[in-house]
Amino acid sequence: MATTNLLTTDQMASFVARGFLRLEAAVPDDVNRQAIEELPGLFRAWLDEFRGASSKQPPINERTTDDESPLPRSGTPLETAYASDSPFGRMVRVPAISGAIASLVGANPVVDHHFVHIKTAGDLHAQGLHCDAIVDEGLAFDIQLFWFPHDVEPREGGTRFVPGSHLRRVNMDDVSRYQHLAGEEYFAGPAGTVVIFHQGLWHAGAPNHGGRDRVMGKLRLNPTVPQVRLWDTSDLAERNRADDHMFARTEPGLVAAELRHFERWYEPAVHRLETVQRARLWRYLTGDQRFDVDWYLTRTERRAALAPQ
Image (tube, rainbow, N blue to C red; front, side, top):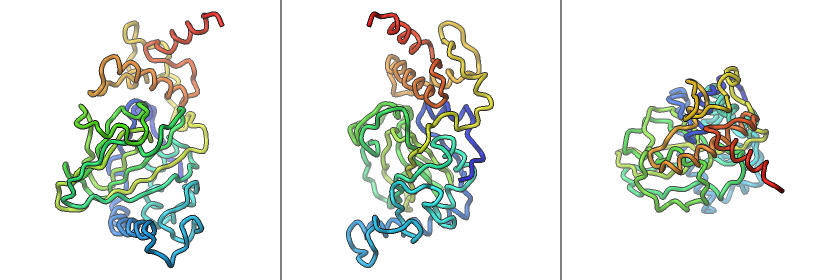
């Protein structure tokens, strides 16, 4: 995959702090039109196979990746998973999209799965908040691309999500009972917008009060390399200070300032714990084990090193 248009340090720090990145109207109109025409068919094909109605087709797990199957096998390299003239194939080759993918999970990720979500007009069911898998351990992460190929107005079924929830690890729908969290968002925006989620971000399907179906293509990708300094790091050295402390001395433009971002649903004490988790994730992404925000990790690690073993 092409690796132009790499993310900036600002974008990466925002992703670490908030758990998502929004690429506004990034996909060209002709690709969006193709998606609107073809993605519902991919959904129906999946539904037929899931129900066993497509008996003339071989099982998905017996197909090769070049037979135009709507569902590539899990573990297929992204480079070969989709024909270059298919909707998903064209979308992931848009320079802004491929650059973001390369910056977050490397230039050669593999497909976990994709799916087409259709929220029909007037469907007022509100899905519960959830993550898409079991509790994920460790600092390495997958990304999920949510592609909206047509304009989505407010209350037209745009995905609900909770910024800053990605490092609060939960098991699937453990958080489904939570409603009306302060600061939660419902996607609304122009055609071709792709919102990239950290796999841990809490999200849900939203009611569609509009008069048209809402179509969304989702793609989950797994990294195959350590996710260390994959973005445009040309300004990282000057912005990655470990000694920036809000009650000591701060400097404008440092990464730590972005990692202090406060979400409205946080309590103040919780915000500090989330900041520590963000600092740990930033250490992984930069390979800099000295990095810190407000000295939280440094002081605890130094005390631990002084304690008798």
